[in-house]
Amino acid sequence: MDNFVLTTVARVLDQGLRGHVLDDVQQDSIQRFRLRWESGGRRRSTAISMQPEEPWIARPCRRREPARFPRGRFAREFLKTCRGARLDTVVKPSADRRIEMRFAEGHTLVVELAVHGANLVLVDARGCVLGSLRRPRKAHDRVTAGQLYRPPDLPAGVADPFANTAAEIDAVLQRHLERGEPLFESTRRHLFGVGSPAATLIGEEASATGRTHGTILADRIARLREGRLEPMIEARAGETAADLDPEEATLWPWQPEREPHPGRAWLRGGDAAETAGWWHEARDARRESALRRRALVQIVRGEASRIHQAVRKCERDLQGFEDPERYRRQGEALLAGLTRARRIGTSLSVPDPRDPDGPDLVIPAPAALPPAKVAERLFARHRRAVRGRERAQDRLDGLRRRERELADLERRFDEETWSEERVTADMRALGLPVALEPDTRAGREAFRRGKPRMEGVRLYYASSGEMILAGKGGRENHRLTFKLAAPHDFWLHALDVRGAHVILRNETRASKPGPALAEAAAVAAFHSQAATQPLVDVQWTARKNVKKPRGAPPGTVVLKRFETIRVRPGLPT
Image (tube, rainbow, N blue to C red; front, side, top):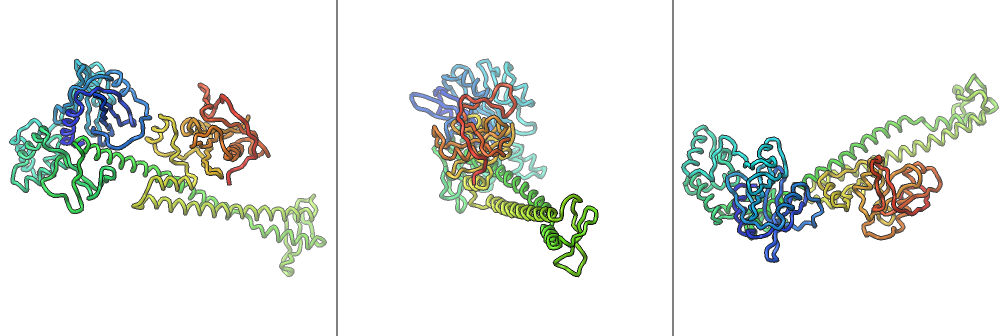
């Protein structure tokens, strides 16, 4: 988070939250926290992101679903200690990217926002650490419980512009200028907490006014502390907070002394905390979308690689098939020349009706088998060879068609109009089980944080459109039943035999399944050891009635109650 933006946000939070009581601490994810405050019936929220690459604190601006992620150790400890405590002040005590939320009861929440060093530290009235979100080895001596809290040390060789005078700042910059380093680089590299946006604005103003960099920087810091400057977003003209594209916009720590660039416009919230919330939530959303896109691309490429290998194998198998016409030719020759057939050891020699002047055909034939039976076997082998080649060719055609569909799908990720919802729908249409988000709190958030996974799950659709999922093994069955499936989904398994766990999705939360139950049961029977039986009994129940015995291997379950349906094994058409 930009240090100057943080300075302004800390002042705004102090003005807006002073005297409020901490009512709740929620976790939107493993790295994002939401502090809820209450005062006189009025509620406010503060969002804190511990994303290592870009931590931040601001006012949340985007609507999110109610918190489903369980509170972690630190959130529980912080809430237990400070719930009901009144916030006394919010301060940014130094040039470091760190603010302190001090409560009237004596406790302090320290929010450290250094890149790749973000942390939350709870400190008691004596200044001793009660707990921390993270315990990095390099900061272990600072955040160990029971020890006095010590803020991070400033990097060696940099100046503190918040503590130095304008002349001292200019002296630092002059030394590096004499060494051949440009002013822009020395400003952002040797003045602690000055990022590229601030260095750019300082350089532009110095060129326009002739004032020194130190004078401008000292003046801006004083005005930021007094609340006379606020951050500003330079976005594409017409953009709002809802559709802000951070890749095409810039967050300035204060409004530049110029008009927006062509095609751009100034965009600002009600205060600095809201402006920062717009910017950082847009960047987080873009980052999450990029991670999700990359994971989806990996799924498509993995499936495409698997299909490519299957195509090569199918082509080799097809080339290895024996020519079925050879068996028919031998069988026809044997029937046409039964009276002229001569046995030579374990072979029969007969004239070739297709080439009367050519040599006789020598046909392998067991000594005890009559020529008519040999011909019958040859025609049977001809039929099997024809069917095998046809099936192999059909499979090869299907694999090539799927290979083309996956290639088309992968190209859609590069389109400017790429949409995650549309692509995931296309992936599901191709049988790739993505976006199968569970309805349990921990399961949903774990699913969202992890990359989409397709291994170990077969995907089918009933004729009425319901999704049917089948596991491929013990661990996959366990993941399907207890991680992907919702409590109100229907669970099926072939009765008294080993087989796959099958889930019939129940998005309407109906108490009884519809006609799709028979198709899901047929899938469960097909993926079981009873698949060769004409009829199979399949047990079904709501997933909430399925439990895993303590200590049992993955895939082993017990049922509180179930019903049985008898079906013929098969897959949906």
